[in-house]
Length: 205
Length: 205
DNA sequence: TACTGACTTTTTAAATTAATTAGTCAAAAG
DNA sequence: CTTTTGACTAATTAATTTAAAAAGTCAGTA
Image (cartoon, rainbow over all chains, first blue to last red; front, side, top):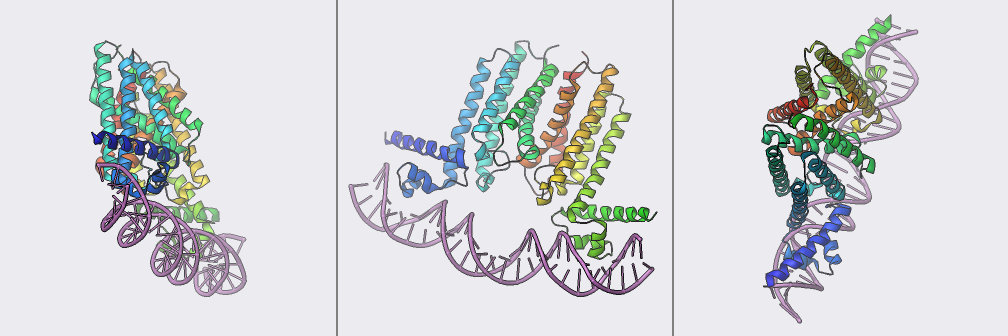
């Protein structure tokens, strides 16, 4: 019963931490600041989360769970492969924009994100994404839109390429503290171009 | 006339510098070491290259020119699109392995590679690569292997994706000081999978 | 159980110093 | 006139210390 209250408090903490993480980045957010935002003592904060890493992990879980949920919802209501994938691309870009400062799973992160657990979380999410995509592809294949193909390899390469385009644009081509809107537009265009060719390659002839 | 001699000396210096750059990286190579390798005084070295950046730039030119040449040769003797691209992928991976420690154009580089000129050089190379690929695609299109398509956008996306797969594997997925052979194999496999789908998407129906 | 103030320990940041490296130059050698 | 050098200075980087900030603990309160 009181567990409900504790969970609610935890959620409040996560929400507050997320605000600072998203805006200032994880390294530039202190536990004291989070506690102050909640009019709480730091000691109380540590009552709910034993250390900073566990809080980061909880925040990571929170946003990534939402991220995957969004993808799932979009793919479920997609009428065909291409529009489904277009929406997926948009979700990915919006997510990347929103949480850019957290540098989740882009290899650029603050020291915190070198943490084993965080890395593991990202692996999980990547796998979930791929499972979602595999299911979607299988469905579209059964509906006759896609030809017979190796769904595992194809979905794998698809997600890899989407991430690759992102990383290349943000961390190689125009490395800046905060990416410009143009960069995100470039990524979007490239992903859509890629999708276009890819689609022709996997659609039923 | 003596210019020949000077040029020869310069080439010697470039070759010597390259050895150290490739093995230890640019930042961990001093001008003194390069001079010593050549049994030359540092002052003499500076007679040929006014500063370290110009030497780095010369080395960069040297290997990248060779890189593009190799690509050109491969594409020229390619009998069809797919094998041509497979060879291209292999060249890229071999190049990446060989000069990994120099971190050329991977956004991870030593401070030196943040230099404007180096960045510009990389842009040049990327453009040359794309021109090569465009010419190749046009040729394969005229030979009837590829369907009608936007060659500019397609070649662009192709090179972006190849680089993206590289960066993702090396700098996001398994960031290590020296990448393992497995990582390179992964990249190769992913690039080939990608090519497979891509090819189906752009070949003549 | 939920919370706190006052504490200790660990990490980071700033300041200082030492060492290394980049880069210069007048003069010598071929 | 081109190439080379030793002996120099200037600029960077590394190592060391010191100060500050942040993480994390705990006895005690409501």
